[in-house]
Image (cartoon, rainbow, N blue to C red; front, side):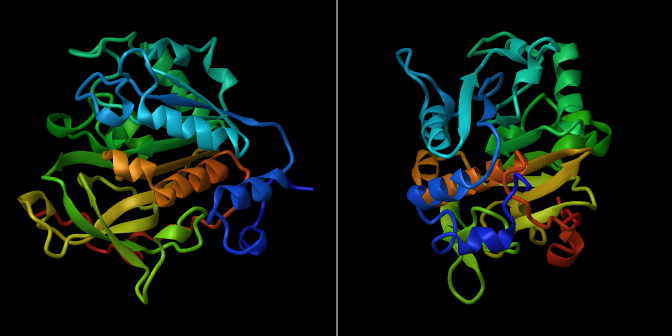
Length: 301
C-alpha cells in the first residue's frame, strides 16, 4: 500500500480536506510511515521580517505556528538560524526544508548575525532536494542567498533554478487579488470562493521573474489596478509547485504579514504543501504556466 493519499481520498475524508485541524489530523493519520522531520530555516542576513524575529529569547510567531500545526499533523518542525545545519554531516536528518529567509545566507548578515551556510552546505542542500527531499519557500525565500537584483542570473543561478523564480522588488503593502488556478492542489480549499476562485487580501506582494517552463502554477497574481510600477505587467505566478530532480519544491509569495500567518487559510496551504512535498499526498503538477500566465515574462520596466 502506498504511503501517499490520492486527491480523491483527500476530498472524501470527512468533507473537503484542510477545512479544520481535526479533519487534517484524521486525514494524515491514515498515511503510513514515520513522522516527517522538517527544518524551518529563518536566518535573516538581510531585512529581519517580524514574523521570524525572536524577541526576549522566545520563538518567533512563524516558528511557533509551524511547529504547533505541524506537530498535530505528522511533522516534527525544528526552527534554526544556524547555517551549520546544512553541512553534509547533518543535512541528512531532514525530510523537508522550509525557508523564510533574507539576504546572502552564506554570510553572517549585517544585523541579526548568525552562522552562515558554508559552500559545502549550500551544495548539500541542492543535492538533498535533487535526491528526493522537499522544499517550501515562503515570501522572502525568493529574496535570499543574495541571488537577486543586480546579479540577475536567472536560471544560471543554482538557488533560483531550484526555486523556480527570482525576486525583483516589491511595492507598498496593498490589497491584491489572487486567482487560484490549481483548485485541486492540497491546502487551497479555504482560498476558493465565488465563481472565479479568487480572493483578495492585504500583503506585501513580490514582483517575480525568470520562471521555468515546468512550473505548475497554483495561484496567479492579478496585477489589474495594483499600485506601483513593478506591477505594471501581465499577471504572473505567485504560488507554484515543481519537481527538482526527484525532489518537490513549493513557493508562495504570501507570508510577510503576521495576520496572514495567523489565518487558517494560510496555515492550511502550508500543511497541504508540506504533505505534498514530503510525499504524504500525491497530486498532478503538470506544467501550466504558459496556459494560466501566458505573458508573465513580458516585463515593462
